[in-house]
Image (tube, rainbow, N blue to C red; front, side, top):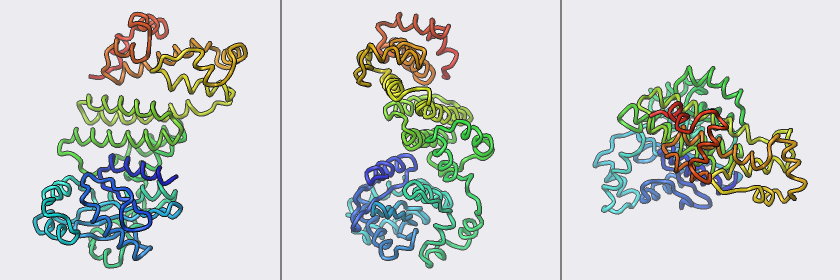
Length: 399
């Protein structure tokens, strides 16, 4: 993973897990800071300086709580995330932070609101998050016990005996959020449909994920978790599996809209399962099948990723750099369809997705997919699927 890719992943993780992340290169000035309050950069610099003084530590203690440290040697990066807030946010703490980290007095209220907005994770959840970051950037699996044991010796006693026992007793955390995410993302990026089916049957459906509190309302909590989680599945899992970036973002948007229409936690949970399976299927489908030559596969991918553009047979021929006389016959022989027919079918398949998972009107869908008219779109849809677009939406769209 390149340094820029690490930065992009950190930005995504901050957006989905709500914990600030700072990236350092040669000194204790952050190269990148993903944090809703820019003034907190001086605190991260102090934590990075602590970590640089002892290259063996993976947890450092600050005034507001604990910070995790992830080192990425190939890129020369030091990543600091946190804090895990382990004390009450009061006037005394704010005064200490303003003084110790040279934050302007005028920033007091902004600092307070920032600290209050941080997710209240359990310590175990925080350590799982650190383990996830370490795995993503170093491809090495660490347990929460590894992170706990690599803290400053004095820090272990600071955490307290109660927390220590809870962490060190956790011999198997593969069913926790970190294990869930790591395993699931690997199945999605590989397009392993059979594997993810077995995973859900044996793990995911029987063991619920535990998450930090991100909303007071239970349904809102489930929706917030879904929105962050499906972004992670798409941007880290599916894109890593070479699913088209634009298509991935469209799917994330569509599933986010569908999530907001859910009226119960069970609906959100079912949607999560459906969305994950959809991403995995799509990654599997775009894997290079042995039945297709490189040229035909390239043409198929071009068509599937340009359904919302006015593409034609000449556009496909230009993309694969082939002449009409030779490639048209080759495409029909390998796919059983003409190029024009395949373009139309790809657009209709995309229309089914938009009908089921978006609230776009029929005219809007017709225009988005560049059908010549709404009536033309409706006629083609019914001829292909034996049902009108409106009937399909009534059957598959959930209010």
